[in-house]
Amino acid sequence: MSEFNKREEGFEKKYALDEEQKFRAEARRNRLLGLWAAEKLGITGEAATAYAKEVVAADFEEAGDGDVLRKVMADFAAKNIALTEQAIRSKMNELIAVAAAEVKAGK
Image (cartoon, rainbow, N blue to C red):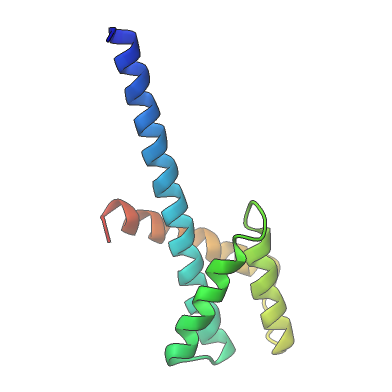
């Protein structure tokens, strides 16, 4: 195997690892967002965990964060909880940093 092929294979493996970590971090962020939202909605215990799983599942509806954001916003609206889209996006940004650190740490 030539040096170029080895280098190319190394880059491909790194890309695959980076994408896997990104996916895991986003799923973890969505779970954390679901737990945060559950608290705001007054949901506790196993119901909060189940709600967090619903938020994670919502991310599979379409590419990007829009589907998760819409779910949480709709649930807040249904309970008359006034949080802006910007506030929720801000929380998502905060939680992606936490989730990415946890994934890198192997948690």
